[in-house]
Length: 286
Image (tube, rainbow, N blue to C red; front, top):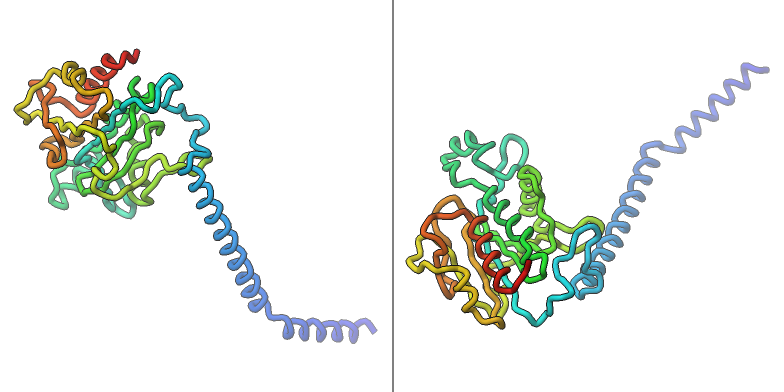
């Protein structure tokens, strides 16, 4: 009695396997999961757009854990300062199987192999210049309005004044690589874009009532920077255009004035330090 029962049960199991195809079931489940994933992605994108709209209208503008630059003692009607870093050496290249931000220290052999001068690839200049701007008392007092960086390849991006730039060069390279590939960097936990690629030219983003000043050692107009900024009107926004490259000079086609602040060639960070110091003395920022 037991043996025929076992055979009968085996036949039933074979019939069930013929009726229910495992591959069809897996395909159906996969289709449902894909449809659910797509619906969730659409909902997330809609939520992101709503949050970005709220950020642009000013409803949620502060970042958790990052100090906000504007101070309560600074009035919005006061003039500010804008920095433009020209010809920054920020270029992405495929080294081996990965994309990296090219620099003369790590990729000298790669650059020479492709017929490029390693001395032209100095992203550390832009890194030092951005740290000098964002860490200055001028920025912490709320006088810095915006920072724009234009690369040697013509890519223009904006850096928000309350952005906290990485201290280490390696992490800075990672951030710049992500920015040039994804076109923006958002704040942790919020949707505000701290760095974002914008459309050229830079003049379309500058304040209307502004005086654009280019700096270069090649300029024949040597000025005392403290006297120069003191002579500027308090109602006018000052835009300083500084070169972020190892050698050469900036494009001064859109500048109103072209000056030199020293009889010696200075680095971008040193020039920015002098500018910030002169303005801090003028506006009595300690």
